Length: 251
Length: 309
Ligand SMILES: Nc1ncnc2c1ncn2[C@@H]1O[C@H](COP(=O)(O)OP(=O)(O)OP(=O)(O)O)[C@@H](O)[C@H]1O
Ligand SMILES: [Mg+2]
Image 1 (tube, rainbow over the protein chains, first blue to last red):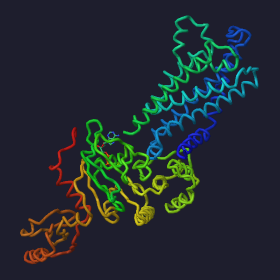
Image 2 (image 1 turned 90 degrees about the vertical axis):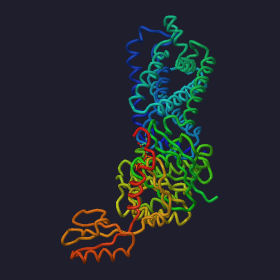
Image 3 (image 1 turned 60 degrees about the vertical axis):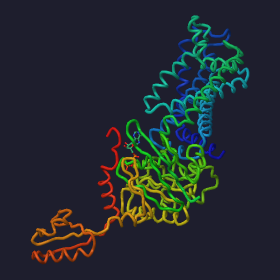
């Protein structure tokens, strides 16, 4: 237990020491999104009846910021440790692969929540965002961040250089978040794209998270949570397998 | 159980490069042991497999009786490794680094021992400095300190004195010798053979992934019976009867290889007979370096060359 807690502490200390770029910067950039998109689209788009576009957009952006930062935390920590070589300190220790997995995922979740709270805190200062059910909100925030934290471990282990990690981010994470319905409800999409969106786990995270605010969603939040949980389990299983086999980290 | 590290038929390839070609090695508890060999011989690869940083193709390794694959947690708990590469985590200070490392081993209230290591490795002034701000030698000391945070019974040091100043080198060895005196098993690699000769009881010499010599320093130096004589002569010509003994001629000095000290008499007699004057004379004892050079050169034909070389 001490070993796991130490690794968690080290991971938290790592992002906290550079809190300006790991927490403050994402909060600012998310607010920029919110301002620009609401300015451009406020009068043209109405996703849910009676909900102004900016208010509709806010929870999606909070979730997107959480997911991206949860991913960034584990993946950048791992790739930095690998490239600079200090991953050996963890590899030499008796930490089990589940200890390593849990510590990295939990640190990612905490970073995700910190950024999410930051974005949410500033957003509610400007806009009136309803909260229907904190429990749903929390459930999706935790599940979503954990999923991305785990995915971040996979990317961090797989990538050998920073540009490979950037490629993973640009060609996998970014399209999946942007096509998940952060900026629209997928009901507004043509049937083909709607069908495609249903294959995207990020869609269920955003949709379920938004349900917690508006009590309105494209699919049932129970279904969404089930799918997100299943996706998390699948990714966790793969991550644990990689860690156990020493794939790309024990030569 | 008297074996600290037990290596059996260990093989490792990197692509087509054979790094280890079937190593068998027992390092006893309490030994001060050196792994020697030229660059690329496989020393680090062997250490990495012992530490679990690399995975062998076949064969097995046990540390204090624990298999490094199936009992990896126990094996790693008993092992402290100083890696060859100068690595550090730029986010933390020296003390943070050591406290975190100690926590990985499940140790909570370890500040006393950590302070002791910091003091023994002369890091007191730097304890709260960021790792990034340390000089290379200082970073090396922290690496040594990190390997010792959990008081491991087996300590492996991969070139711990590379890039380290004389003072620390002596301080480091004093500390390591003290640990050895307290019962810790020490394994080190170094390219400074005088260091190995002064410290170690036994050495293994590796060449192209194979052990080509494994013995006590004493036995190894004894295999080179005889001695070497260095002579400066006027005129600078080696008399004909001594030509068969000639080993080398450099900087105006002749080197003669003798089978034993008694042969010295014949040499002097031959010089007198040739009316050659001895300006300078020195008898050289065979040392580990000489043994090393000899073994590395003579075994060339014996061992099959590593593939794809
Ligand atoms: N990760 C790796 N990938 C490919 N080849 C490797 C790797 N690690 C080591 N090798 C090769 O294995 C062989 C043994 O290398 P090793 O680092 O064990 O040598 P060494 O005895 O420690 O040398 P040195 O004295 O230079 O440290 C070398 O030919 C090296 O190029
Ligand atoms: Mg080496």
